[in-house]
Image (tube, rainbow, N blue to C red):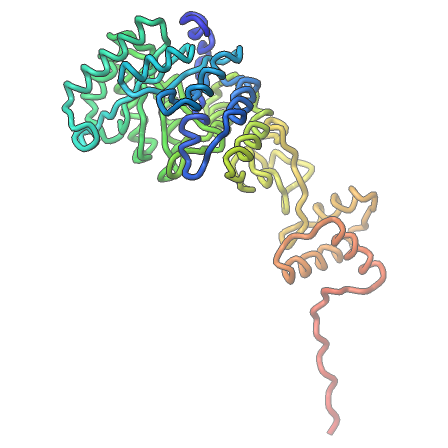
Length: 395
């Protein structure tokens, strides 16, 4: 278990990721991780340099508590956090697991306070103060999360942050629980909260309208220093801000270094995919198998058609041979088979490739391309659909 000062040292980067794959991620409908899988995922996240890992909620039961305790005792470089509602018994369960950090969360919107808690604003503030002060007395690093913050009154959110800070919290979390924020609104609200509260801000976004990454970046630009993510964006409903997207967009769009080794993101995702049963779809940004597949790219100048080198995320660019291929693609693909084409042969083979791809409704593999090449060289075009004009009839 790390001391408070050691946790603060772990989180010293200008932009810090708290990954919740083992928390929010397992809330994806149908996803269940075994404890062994959780330990492996935690180790992979740590190997990648994720500075803080949310390991779960110990109050959920014996197995969950066992998993959280085991992860806390693995000797990871990362800070290990447990999630809690603002209840003393939940915080005690986390303390019993030897975690060094806790999340303390309560709804902040009128609709959730009235319908889920059946309590008023003052009760929420009192509860936050009581639970945060208790956790602080036990030397824990604390993130206090305002749930459903996007529907909460801005003045109340500022009070929420101030009370948390006064009670001993280390940061205030703004959770857009239903993914209702847009980047412009999120930017303005985070900026206002930070300016008035003078407190470290964490952004927690959800992807119901496809805005999770965009909202996270907007919050970072307005001063948020912490981002809660999950691998592949796994999470309840439409998921959360994907770890891999936040790392790469922060690097390339904001010049913000998270300290995470991006070459290991695909490996983490593969482990999470296997454990959860959720596939990595081929065009998934950053880690999808087809992210760097080129069918019509300028192969000798990849920077013309790629936003960054695939090696940054441990991937390789691949050639796809199909309807949209160009002559250079065909030449490069045949060169991989140690066959050099003349310009005329490349043009003829390209025409055959386009016809074959269209008729088969897919791209071609290397064997099929070679077969077309052999057909061309022998004068046999299997996919020639030119129909000769009928001979003129004599009177």
